[in-house]
Each structure stands twice: as structure tokens, then as C-alpha cells.
Image (tube, rainbow, N blue to C red):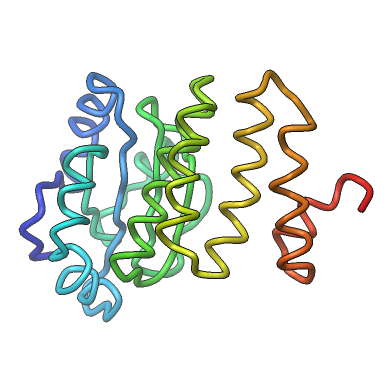
Length: 196
């Protein structure tokens, strides 16, 4: 990849994880491939977006990893399944656990939403559900795309549950809105755990 954005390469992945751990930031690996049109568009459009660059540099450690360079040792240590398409984006905790995955070209607004959800999930994993709630609430107002909105409502319910001391009552308003607004969605099905 020819992107000018600050990043590590696949050969520097251990160094990248060391930095992520030292700075307690999530690590994003962009698995790309030669002649991949979505990868080329990420490079030409998404990574050229100033907001994307600023967000990544402030909140993430980025690794650009060519799929043909993935070794068996790397796959054993850091991959939970085979990668079958490029680009594939994996968000990791600083200790190397996968938090989130996205596949295919992502325009800047969708990429920023994926990155924000990744940060929210990391905050919840760290026991800082209120921080996750705040990040997700920002997505509701910034990116009202229906597919994204469904998932964000789901995670808002989870974050509220933990932020309010495992209060089911805190979760219900978000999941109720999800089920009422998107009754036929997969996210609504996942939230179908309480009566009407």
C-alpha cells in the first residue's frame, strides 16, 4: 500500500503491539492484497481523508499487512479464522485479542464508525462502560445510517447495562427502540430477549 498515513508494516507487527500496549490504544490491522480494488480505494479515498488520518493517529496503532506476507506463526498467534477477502480490518486489544472485524472497502464515514465502535468495545472490556456509552452516543447523532444505527443501538444497550451497574432497566430503552424501529433486522433479533 502506498498510503502516506503513519503505520507499521506486517514485519513490524510485534513492535506495533508493543506500542499499543505501552500507550493502551487499540491496534488496527488492515490486511490488504495486491491488485485489490477495495484496498486501492481505501488508500486513495479513505486514508486520504484528514478526519480519518487524525482519528487513527490519535486513537489507534495502525498496521498495514499484505496478506501474502501472513505467516503461520502470525496466524496462530493473532488470527481466529482464515482471511478470505481483502481488505479485512481487525481491531485488537493492546494484548492481542480480536475485538472487532470488518471486511471490504469502507468509505471514510463508515470507517470512522467502525473505529469508534472498536474503541467503545475496548472501553467496555476495560470496565469503562460510561466511556463506551459516550462514544456510541456520538455515533447516533453523527452517522444515522440504518445498518449502523441498528448495531449502535444494540451496543448502546449493552454499554448502558454495564454503566448502570448491570441494570437491565438501563438496557431496555435502547433495545426497545431497536426492536420497534428495525423489527426485521438481525440486531433486533439479537435484542429479542425481553417481552414487548
